[in-house]
Length: 263
Image (cartoon, rainbow, N blue to C red):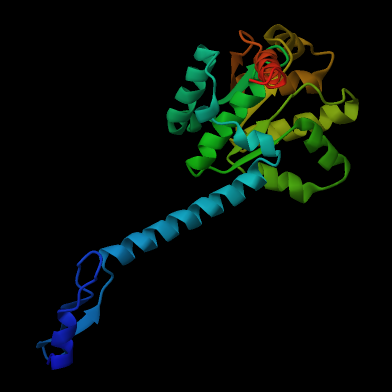
């Protein structure tokens, strides 16, 4: 039975949103009868405040994860929102890759950005990485140089952490040492990653012709296997139509000149 106090509560409303602060609910008893009770409820103000708090919490957790996934701070700033789109074809291809990632993921299809120095390969690789992190995928950005260093130091646990990610970004492949030990460990890592169906997003200063030549060069079997795996699993994208760093240099120089002239 609802008391007078309960009835008074039912007439209590939020001073801001004017929604009721209490509501009446029916509770069935074992004998089949129903009795009513008055319970508190969240008004619209409280629900919206809770949603904002949860959103902020999720955003904070996401940014904390991003720090682990992409350790180099400036790479965490490489996003499509900040893309100058000077290379429209590559920019659009990268966006399409993210949009269709679920389909591509079923076949573990990655990307190989190749081209000259300073053309934006690293930028676009990490724009994709950041976009996929925003979508909730597990990403890890590193380099084969760092992976080989971990192998050399016997830090297998750290390598396992890298391989636990769904998408692995390897920057500047081909820049690592060309020794028998390095070739063996490089193949071991790439082979394991592809065997585990990891998505590889790679960048290199090598030309596609050089990569194909190394794939066919059986005098260095380990290296040939590496680039065979790379071309099998990663679609090559040429990024060299615009010298992004030279463009940035010109913009910075112009900015500095304006300051020095007192503008």
